[in-house]
Image (cartoon, rainbow, N blue to C red; front, side, top):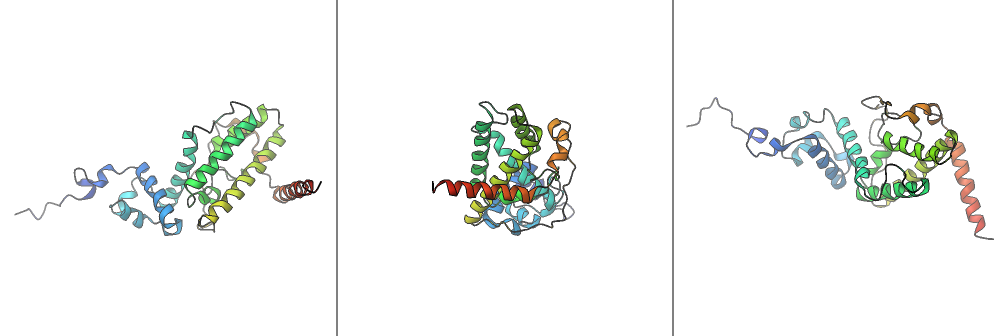
Length: 237
C-alpha cells in the first residue's frame, strides 16, 4: 500500500513528463501556434498551459505574465528574419537590394504568421519614440546605417525609414486581414514596454533619437497621396 504522505509525481516531477522539458522557447513556440489556430484574444496562460499539458502556474517560471508572453512571441517571430537566407542584416549589394530583401522577408513572415503579425505593429517597443516603432532596434539601426552609408543625410535617412516602414506595415496589415487576421486593438493601449531600450550598441539610434521621435504623420500622408496621384496621372500620358 502506498504511503499516503508521499505525493504522486506528476508533470514536471515525472521522468520524461512534459513539464520536465518545459522551457521559455517551447512556451513561445506553443504560443505562436495557439495564436495562429485560435487568435490572440483567446490566448491565456491557462489555455496555453492546457495545450502544453501543464498547469498554468508552471509557465510563470519562464514567462512572468501574459504581457511578457506576447512580447516574447513577437520577438521570436521577428528573430526569424535573422535566419532567412534571403534577408541580409547589413547591405551587401547596395541599399536598394537590402531594402528589397528586407521587405520581401517581412512579407514572408506576415504570410507565415498572419495572426501574430498584427502584434508586431501594435506591441509597445523598447524605444516607443521611434516613429513608426519597429520591434527590432537592430533592424532600425541597420536600416539607418544602410541609408547614411549610401549618402543619405540623417534627415533623409529618417524620412526613408518612416516611408518604408509605414508602407510595409500598412500593406501587410491589409494582407493579413484579408487572410482572416484580427487587426483590431486587443491590448490595453496604456501598456508600456517591460524594459527601456539599451542603446549602447545602436549609436545611430542614439544620434538620431530627436529626429526619430518627431511626428510628421500628416505631412507623410500628404506626400504619399501626392505620389499616388502623380503615378495614376502618368498612366494617362
